[in-house]
Image (cartoon, rainbow, N blue to C red; front, side, top):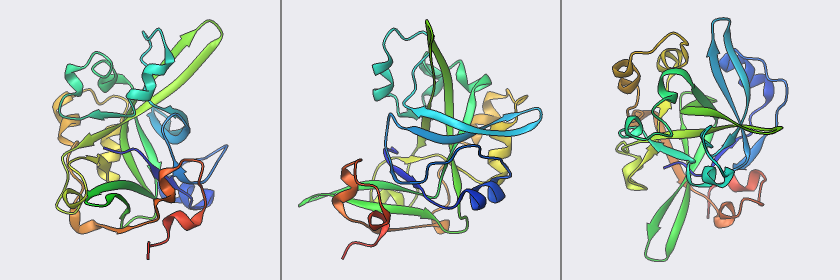
Length: 219
């Protein structure tokens, strides 16, 4: 799964690496569910960046609290779920990150790890988004897709987020791409040889903790 990540690099680096313009930027060492997270969508005029609430709220939902349980979607079964199935063809997005956290179960509890993609300063998770409206209230929300773990990630957890390289990101965000088989082919584990990880402080467990000490290796 993916329940916490970071995006703390400079606005200029993110804009340069992803060829986007960011109008508002809030760096974070501890991005958590229900927060607003930076992502982008594809349009006929190119990429457009903006913020989504993390935790998908389907347009038909009666209560926004449903989003608290929909921070992730399994890529293998997303076509079977009424919350996700209609979004695959028309409401795809990517979420921008520079690392993410995962917790490994051990005898003395859970140990948090920071995971990075080594050959990129920033990278993107595959996501789906929806627009929920009720009266004057409107929320644009998203979920992060997950897949089976690669060789590195299976040491920590039995799931991992779908990370898209540049070519896959272009295909995922292409607005006129509606071939489900092509889209599903992108939902695969990122190469383990291009990733690394190390343990970090359990301070990351609390979303209110948010500073650079969270990404320092645990002693």
